Length: 156
Image (cartoon, rainbow, N blue to C red):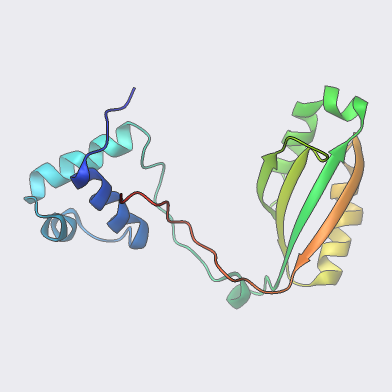
């Protein structure tokens, strides 16, 4: 169970989403709290699972992952009965950054990154298409990125 977020919590979360390397003293100064209460709030937000972790965000293109693909996956009737088998396989593919269960004409939406189209083709034929239960995959190549953020709109 978690408590309701107040204005201080929301400002703390907004700052941490922009720069998780900020110290509790730096955050406290920016939100108008003293360091100890600010630190306690941050710890509570971690304990309650509001803050799930702190990571370093990488520029995918600067490390050679130039191609981003969105793949719509439809399972056959047998595949739907083995939902766990499909999700376990997807979790094992480092190329798949996100996977969502959908309602509608397709069952899953995957966000996949590779170095280039040829690398995606190898991933598709050697890994993705080998997962049992897949009926159809519709691959959509992203040409450019207009907006990409990990920041949730916590300030109201």
